[in-house]
Image (tube, rainbow, N blue to C red; front, side, top):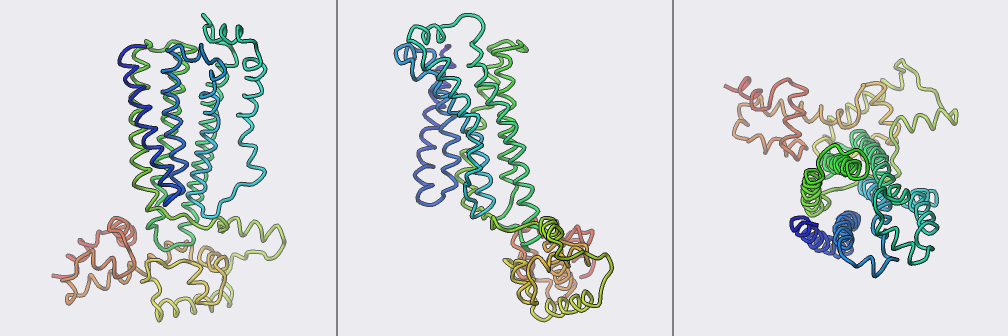
Length: 385
């Protein structure tokens, strides 16, 4: 191991252990979600420690600890997936069926017991000091890690997209429920997984790049990833609110009803639909609940005597909108009236967006331009001379 590699692994180990320890302690006290992120960072530090120990005589003196750290990596991606799921959906609980996520770890350990740990010390030393082709069960660990990583990244993206759909169907604002950073975390994890996959292919299989160049690329990616994930762990989870794990998407609700033959959705409007539309319009006009930035579909549905699923179905079938879009239309219409009023030209855009139920300038500008075709500032200049 060169001096640069040694310093890199030592620095990475110290950095990750320091911050993962902080996240473990802080997670217990304030942010339980940080425990998951702390495990990821801790394991990356253990990988650096493993590289240091491989180049020393430690494993030769303690052969029973060899392959322990790489095999623990098979718990990394299931933990990552559970972290994403439990952060997005409040009330997520582990079930017996979730034990299937431990299957790769258990299988690998059964193989390691037979092929390595139950072997005589002489055989273990021979495996550690192998020359030429790496033993098949060691290569299998690394390939299993990369394949597992890609599978769990796909599963995590599905969770995030479902979370996003639920927010748009049930909440009037995405404040503190912004899925973007979770999606970023998943994408960066995919990128990290692919880069390490390429590194291992280059290391154990096809030599696509010189070993030194491959190492520096992989080390740079790992270090950037560590710094980025530490930043996210410290800044974002505190601001993030998940949604109830028991909430169902409208399509899930309909599928369940159809399965039970409880009702059939009709395409045409009925007198009942028209009456409900009138009741909803009257309620929105008199109560102005859309001005509440924390309004949810559950609260609006209760106000007009429906369940949230019934209101969601009505909005989608009769108006072609989800709850998020429906509420935003009322807010934008109120914003237009304010922007058109010469007597209120002293109000800033920020004051207006807060007054009508938005809590982010970027989300207000995006929604306004989507509905009106102009920015709020352009619209005001056009109507107030």
